[in-house]
Length: 412
View 1 (spheres, rainbow, N blue to C red):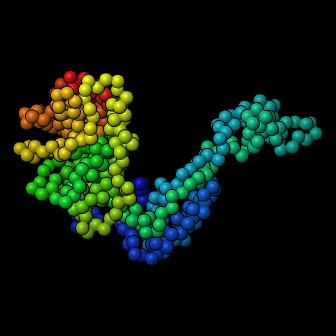
View 2 (view 1 turned 60 degrees about the horizontal axis):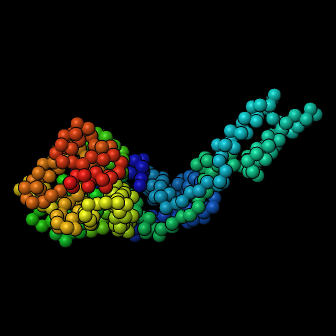
View 3 (view 1 turned 90 degrees about the vertical axis):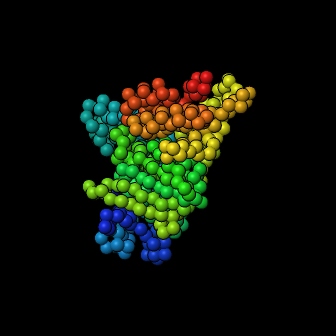
């Protein structure tokens, strides 16, 4: 992901146009290739060495791309390569412990240790380091004292992309950077779009959403980070991570209301003309998901007694045409003896409006013969009062992880 200083866009008649590099631009591909080669050549070397080289390349390569903004482009490409790099400490010893012991011994001397002992045979710097080496077993304490500094980290591995892949990733990352400052996002999924795939990422990232059925497809409303009061930075990052998931299907149209340099602007994209490609490989298995849903699956599997209830993946989209909304359950709970089916939705971030609407939908679903449970995290919402009222309406509260016993209690 890019930081805000790497994101570039321009306003044109109220519409925001993000900066792009052409995948066919030989200058851009040459710069991407050189940066990839630079990272690959520094495997096993300190970060400080790589950063010095990047500064030199930034000054040399930037003007060839863009006389005014070339340095920002090079910095952004380098930031994306950083995501593919694995860093390791140069030693297993604890640098803090080494520093502390060296300073303690030096402070206990009547005068600062000298480089050489001199006529009075005073303790030297080497004597202090030798004593620390004997106590800790580290051969060269001086070389390891500051190994926890970022510049001392060694580049352990590097997943080298092709120049074309790096340029494509840059173009997507620019859009993601704009979405950090979104107030709202509307996505129209056409008739042929894989709605389940899109909602996999909505659910995985815990986004606040409303779903409206259309005659041919669905309209997805997503709250932006500037529309909620808490967790703005974290939520903005999740919204940005959603965008490559949307790119994995088509057709779609996107319209985002964003704040750009103090002004309101609209970002509009569609699957036919955007020419953007996702770098995602596709959804993982529920058990591999590193979020609340994956943790709930594992907790359910560890539960000793589930009362005859079996946990399955979520069912189809559950529409409510009268209310012009729909729900996408995360899981289906099926009782082995009675055949009763209950749908479970786990909310990630939520707003007071969002939670009130979910409670109303619970009642509407029950009237239509659908039994549903909604679970909401106490830590990812805007109002504890709203959550308390929602609990009375049937919402299951949880903190960081949704326990199986809380869902089983609600089922009873």
